[in-house]
Length: 463
Ligand SMILES: [Zn+2]
Image (cartoon, rainbow, N blue to C red; front, side, top):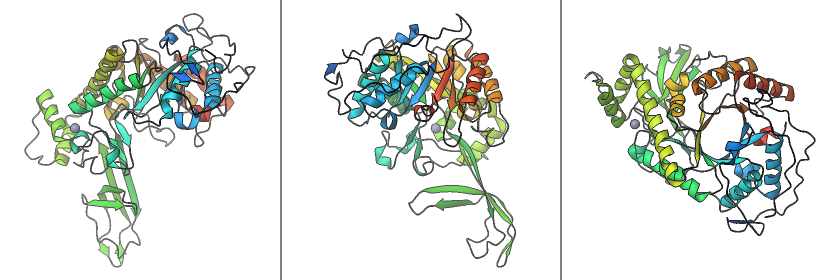
């Protein structure tokens, strides 16, 4: 086989057990970038590339490599042809990347070129001992139209604490969140993960993104000082539906209304809120009652009242119940992919706090809130052997707090699996070279096995 390019010789970093140092080696600037000059797409059949048969073996080779970073990759915008793939593989080698998390659709619907690109990636990276993992949005799908959904029944989608179905009112009009308790969801998602491994034989494993409940408390404060002649006098508890011209509808609820007269307006503000907390569908509520021997009071007649009672009276059991549901799904996915490819790995992206980006917004850190709010008891996934590594999304934090968060994650992982601390760089959250060095040092000192660059397209500008 003719390789896409000759792999540059970069001294491999040694593991922490060997030296305790060197896991975040600075990029080797002497390595030329983009030296490969191969023809671009279209590719031939999936098993062939540039007229050559691809050897997609040694998928778990990284078990023996010493590269300690990971990176997220968007296939459609960052690895579109042979030149970009070659440049990417060289970038990975330069930056000690051992695991590439490439975004793939869980539905299996991909552009025809996707299989060839992944195969080419696997070859270009495989020759350097770098693994490719298929990263999927496990429980969250964003589609323009419901017809694009794989599961097309209301019962498969979550119901929030107001009793509103996500299927009826998708998040921002297009976001559909599956109910991880529904047996059909568990079966379908697990089978889809397994199918991806069949469809993309170059993958070393599956990386679960959005393996959690959707959770957000949204609030709008409207200045109504001059709000005469509008929709009347909103009352506390009343639903108000916001709708854009293109048909996106979101229901909010009046939390506080100060106006007592409409013409002239007397009062100064209207507070609207919407609580995206899931899943309070009838089956999830029944399961909760059975699991914990809880009987919801007769006075709690509707879903909103039941949710309110549970959150006020049984918050610990509710958190445990939801986490167990997500853990069960992770276990089912593990089992399904083991059935297809026993050597394939499973990994996950996990959050560090809810709401995420709290430091950026001046909000307090809430330890373990990823468990309570997102249902991510990910250390249990580790303990049970469901996942082989985790990539916490430690975004939007100063290096000092980043270090503290990573230390906590290392403790939770208990040394059982590698932890790659996710580091974000975007136009909205720029990271300079000097600051990158600070993050890398802090992560290493905290005990992380490496960094997980989110994502290649932004980090390649710097490193
Ligand atoms: Zn449910």
